[in-house]
Length: 300
Picture 1 (cartoon, one colour):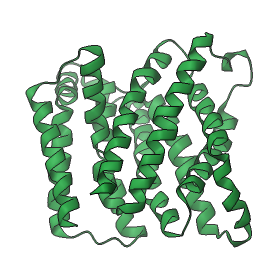
Picture 2 (picture 1 turned 60 degrees about the vertical axis):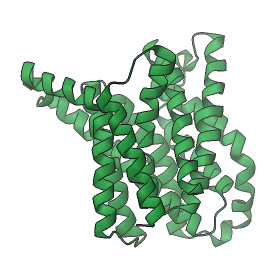
Picture 3 (picture 1 turned 180 degrees about the vertical axis):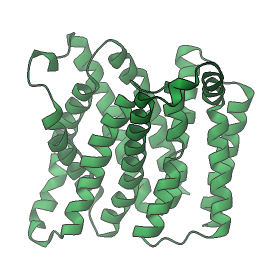
Picture 4 (picture 1 turned 180 degrees about the horizontal axis):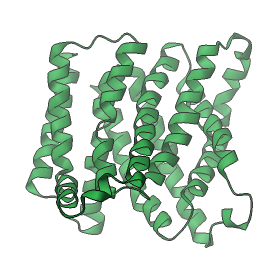
């Protein structure tokens, strides 16, 4: 039970992230710049965790190096950029809706790479959780339906196809990051080492995408304070809780628990921004809680 609670609390702190991150993006700050500065700070914070890895550098296997690339370069760097850029080509409601299928990728990869057993009872309850997650996104489904009815070309144009590709990259990247993070844990790497390697690899992958000029500077000094707060909440604290939970749970169960993130994001918007949840969203949250707890208690 401790493992799933750790993931749930990580999702709660990730949800707090949206209250700072999206206002920064909306003010015109390049998302790549935000993510790049995040990785600089997080690499510095967890650099001490890389010391044990240095001692083991002669023992590093190609598979371990690839795993660090997946969780850092692909999951923390490329997937985040792809997800952010997809909003330029697709309606935000569609992007968020498609993201709900990330657990499907993670569960498939957990079975393929980690050889985790996926039995029928797990699949049934995973579908229950996915249904709950879709209910949480019921307003997005409604807006997508209205978009289909009013302007079908926006979901079939060349730009939309590019958007689907970008969302697919983010879904694959984040789903794979869960599985390969679990793989590193099973290989004996400590949480602080995994996190240090993740952020360092992400930093190296992001560096070529940066514009090394005045545009990389944040417009206001307060933005740096906001960035530090965001890093502490969603980067350091949330990721620490996440990897502690991942160490205790199968990757397939972790993927289900990660679905609490959008629910908590909506709750945060309700609490801080006054955007109330409707009955369907509350019902979806309850279904998600029940389904994930059954999976954990029954050890499916």
